[in-house]
Amino acid sequence: MHAMSDPTALAGMLPFDSIGLYEQPKPRFIFKMPRVVPDQKAKFESDELFRRLSRESEIRYTGYRDRPQEERQVRFQNGCREGHTEIAFVATGTNIQLVFNPSANGYSMADPTRECDFDKEHGKVHIRSHFIMNGVCVRWRGWVDLERLDGVGCLEYDEDKAQMEDSLLREQIERYNQRLRDFEEKQRAYRQHQERPGDPDLEFFY
Image 1 (cartoon, rainbow, N blue to C red):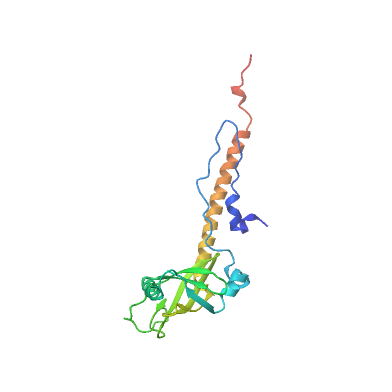
Image 2 (cartoon, rainbow, N blue to C red):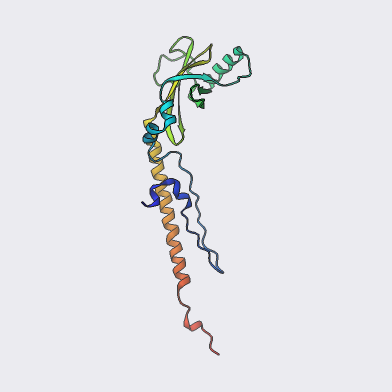
């Protein structure tokens, strides 16, 4: 199968041929590593870590572990209102930095699209966070008890974000392929120019 089907192999495909007196044209582009893998859903469903994290399980707040519990409670709530927090899945020890839209400060009614909700359930904050993990678009969903600073959470496959990233990936690879084709065409033209026989009118006779 042609290597173009594997985006991870593209970075090593520039043909650099050494020449004698003349410097070869240099490529004017750098391949940026893709943010996602080609088949995100398949990886999410088959990868053992994703399979374990996709089941609802115990999570804990991991920030400021060297501070008193009361201070940690305050810092946790302040972080949530700023739009970030740190949690870990207890069973696997997987630590995740969550970033999300801050709380609406209680001015709006219950909204299923809110990513940080202190009003949904008394004594808890419900959080949703979108990010890319190991090349797959995922959504963390769960809640944390405001006193104990533990709770329940899981990872879900983020279909909408995955489609957006897949589209960007295809566009990125196509742009790279076009630049690579242009570069290879210049290489061929350059080699053909070097391989042409010398002009007989320029030969010297003694």
